[in-house]
Amino acid sequence: MSPLMRKGLDVLIATGLTAAAVFVIIVSNSVLMARGGSWHGFNQWYAFILRPDILGTILLTALVTVGYFIWMQGRRPR
View (cartoon, rainbow, N blue to C red):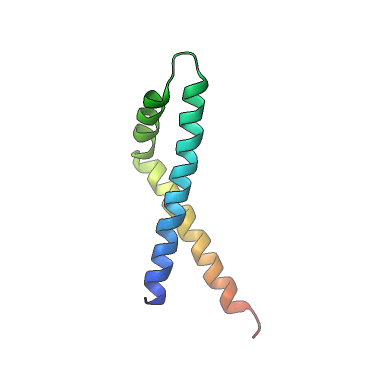
């Protein structure tokens, strides 16, 4: 696998982990609410995660983080 593909995979994994963390927070919050439930929480999460501003923020954060790690690896003495 090429280094560029590996970094792209890192971005996708970070994006998926962020979406999963938000899923756990929203669904568990919905289950604990009086008018909630797990299905209601899933619907809320799905509507939230499909918003373009949320997806953009998640992807931008992952890209900046991976870029920072690439930059730091280039600055380390060997």
